[in-house]
Amino acid sequence: MSNLEFERVTVRPMDEYNQTLVSHVHPPDWVNPKPADIYDLVVIGAGTAGLVVAAGAAGLDLGLKVALIEKHLMGGDCLNVGCVPSKTIIRSARVVGELWDGKELGINIPQNIDIDFPAVMERMRRIRAGISPHDSAARFQKLGVDVFLGSGRFASKNTVEVEGQTLRFKKAVIATGARAAQPGITGIEKAGYLTNESVFSLIQKPERLAVIGGGPIGCELAQAFRRLGSEVVLLHRSSHVLNKEDAEAAEILQKVLIKEGIRLVLNCKLEEVVTVTEGKRLYFSTNGHRDSVTVDEILVGAGRAPNVEGLNLEAVGVEYDKQHGVKVNDYLQTTNPKIYAAGDICMNWKFTHAADAAARIVIKNTLFSPFGLSRSKLSSLVMPWVTYTDPEIAHVGLSEQEAKDKGWNIETIKIPFSSVDRAIADGEESGFLKILHKKGSDEILGATIVARHAGEMISEVTTAIVGKLGLNKLSGVIHPYPTQAEAIKKAADAYRRTLLTENTKRLLGFLTKLS
Ligand SMILES: Cc1cc2nc3c(=O)[nH]c(=O)nc-3n(C[C@H](O)[C@H](O)[C@H](O)COP(=O)(O)OP(=O)(O)OC[C@H]3O[C@@H](n4cnc5c(N)ncnc54)[C@H](O)[C@@H]3O)c2cc1C
Ligand SMILES: NC(=O)c1ccc[n+]([C@@H]2O[C@H](COP(=O)([O-])OP(=O)(O)OC[C@H]3O[C@@H](n4cnc5c(N)ncnc54)[C@H](O)[C@@H]3O)[C@@H](O)[C@H]2O)c1
Image (tube, rainbow, N blue to C red):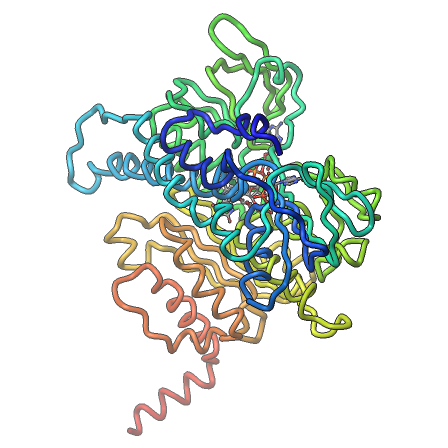
């Protein structure tokens, strides 16, 4: 790649922090190495999935030759325009949420909280730059990976081209991720809008912000911007936000969003966006009523589009579609048996930890499963996820609806946090824990937690599912008092109480009287 092309890689604003970020994840003076004769693995895309595959394969010290190709910023969405910047500004926004609760907790807070939006964003840029050495070109080079900066494209059944060089591979991995899907609303392209790729470059707070899409991106960022001082309208197509979550959980979050001053429009059909002197005007209808709202900025979080373009997948027999991405089997193998895929490019679970877990499967299946023996399967993963709103909504395993759809006989135990002492002390009683188990058995099938730190709690349930620890075992686990995680023990105890039939109760009563 020529230096001129490198210079075009910028992350706005190009302050000292973003310069540091770029110097790590797309160094301007990087010189692509001379390719090896043949690579055991060529990985296209250096987001979480690609990085984990490359580091895992090269880091084993088995002398494997691994090439990693990245066209933009190593670290992909997670580091640059996803988890890291979003969670960093959510942290600042949480302070405001805490202050708003101050009066209830006996602390009088001044009417006007002074929010320094530029400082919030600068802190985010500083922290992101500070984390970036972990995903840097230099670190991967040290690990023994040949890092190529440029756009990767299959040239033949066993070669990939990057910046005029040809890399021969034994196996290849597509880890090119996804980007914000275009919303397809009349006039929106002309009016202009932000996505996750541009919103973290803001240095001034938008006074009025419309967020399109009430998925994880929309909900997390709508709440963060509201708390950081923007007037926010959240426009969502369905009857509740976070479609993939338990409706009761979403309902709790919706109440909080509304209480915090977000205008929430559900069942929203966006019709048109027009630029007027006052700003960007969005016309929409909801439950048969036409309405409009005028804002300074529009943020779109309306799903993802897989990065399948420009890879020349047809030439290597890799099937894909533009909505769901690269087609893979349970072993993450594409329709070309030598080519695998991992992460957002091919999976419904679009999470960093899912990309990481998939990358580990790919390492195993490409390098350590001779003749296809002992391959790992995607379907064997137990996948938790968390939406980092306040309260957080965490989930693992099956939902009630999925269990019903499968025709499974299930029981649900629900523990409201209003019955958990620590949550009461914290003034955080509105959430709940729901655990699903097989009817007539203590086997846990899934759980949803709505709580300020639900994300920290869900791993206990995940561990129980993975380790096949049923509710009987969890009931014997001592949970420190007072913690919100006691809700899990309460659920386990509640299950054990269901084992007490009238006869056993009578027998126990009788034995107690005798002793
Ligand atoms: C705002 C936001 C917040 C999020 N928050 C969370 C969170 O809190 N927790 C969580 O688990 N997940 C979160 N996610 C999701 C998470 O970021 C993704 O699931 C994860 O980054 C997927 O990793 P990946 O490696 O599959 O793809 P990506 O991270 O998208 O990486 C793909 C890489 O491939 C490169 N590439 C594409 N085409 C080519 C090519 N032809 N040649 C070379 N390189 C190419 C791209 O430039 C990119 O760097 C969030 C996402 C967003 C947008
Ligand atoms: N905490 C996390 O783990 C986290 C955070 C952010 C993003 N992510 C990942 O990123 C992915 C993308 O997030 P997302 O929120 O963009 O996608 P999403 O698909 O989960 O949600 C987008 C929502 O927007 C709605 N929508 C689409 N077009 C619309 C329109 N024109 N008007 C109104 N509503 C519309 C959809 O019905 C959908 O429910 C997610 O799948 C998630 O896995 C994860």
